[in-house]
Image (cartoon, rainbow, N blue to C red; front, side, top):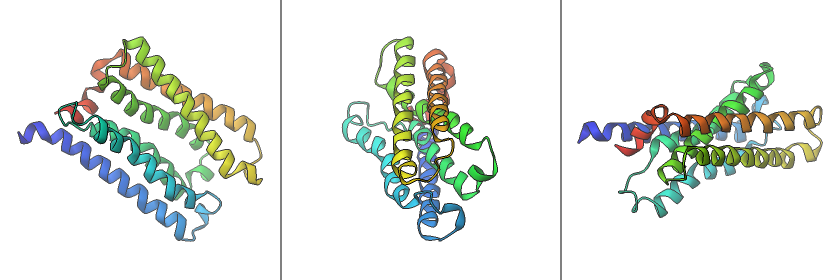
Length: 204
């Protein structure tokens, strides 16, 4: 029994660690008065990020746990949460300002991780054949990329900050996010062996 439950426990631990490290850094960013967090909207993030990280597990627990043998897919949840930790850590370590390619890499990698997790959940729900699953994951990633850029506009650009190259940056971020989602869709939809480890964290 313990051997069967250990992968799920690993998923729970991973999700808890990711969530805790994100919250700690958000609190430091919002209240620590450090220069690297100035003008980065960490007050907004402290309110929004925890909600975004917990909303899917909460909905899944409320609506699906009883219909899927009380199993919570913690491996998928950890993937969903990880982009928030990566984003916050990039600000903590001043990578957005000191590494030129960091922002672009984040939009690709974070959307890959985010939509990989979402794709595993969609697969558990039995969303269509592989091509439908890939199309759904990619489309969802594209919509989320657009939504993220709207959030950046509301937080930064409309107030006159980060205007230089904002148009080009927005388009490239949406493209990279969509490409990351496409790769996630291919991982989940075309290569079942590739998602075995995250799935085992939630199914065993």
